[in-house]
Image (cartoon, rainbow, N blue to C red; front, side):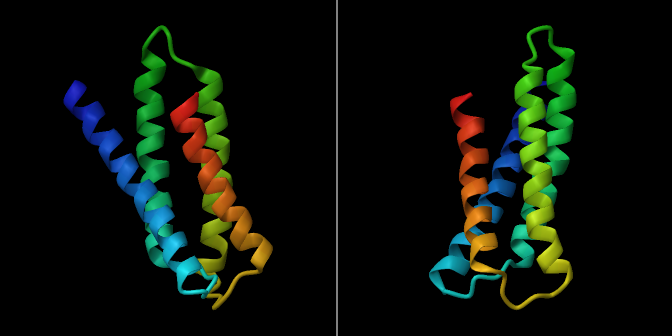
Length: 114
């Protein structure tokens, strides 16, 4: 079971790398758009996060508040990324772009510091 848990966490981190890396590339190239790498990354994060939450809820000392907060943040981030990608927008509003970057940072902060 430990191997499954480690593989899922590794895939979850790869999903985060795709989301953050896609956002960073968009920022550095000054395109301010969202790409399919970000979409696939958030999809991987959602899928592995759901399985990891299911595995964690079996344990008696599971932190359900943290699972709930991370789930809400991940769903919000998924919507913020998926809608512009599905609508094939060339650019997103500057506020939307920076809010997505901030939410990526907040999500990472919750994962690390809580």
